[in-house]
Image (cartoon, rainbow, N blue to C red; front, top):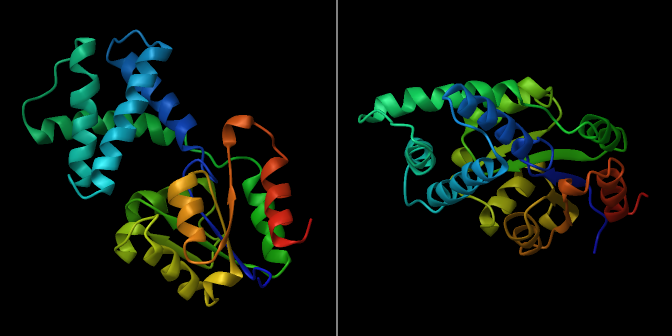
Length: 226
């Protein structure tokens, strides 16, 4: 197998601390509604997000509807009544989004690694399931907006990970064969299995370990440059 000439990345929970921001945002949002925030309450919020986002990803419901369903799942059991109309529910969700955005950050090892990969001559791409507007805003706020040669959101390219077509689009836009690309992500199915299905090498990231040297070491090892 040829040495990778390009590196593709997932965004959420690989480069961008989505789970940390989501839990911090949910804690602030729910406290503002008068809810006593406990780990079990935050777990329920995370579970609802995962379930409803997957329903959107599979095409069962629209993007805005998955947001509404998250609130409808979590808030009534906590004694919080929601508006009857969709617009009213959307306004409530905007309160959460404000708290979520306030907690946005890239993981601290990300910008140094991307700069190092760039200096080694690698082209860099991003492949993320999500809307172009929100994912682009995350890149801008965290300073990652100039780090990539190619940014592929599922909304723009019309397919989502782990669909092999998404990885082919990434490789095509990077200007390399899929076999000359390494992909880095936190999901064993959407990221790793999806990338390997088109012949890419893949690195699985687990940010829960908290090892600040882990990402760089694993990426450079996979590139044969450790």
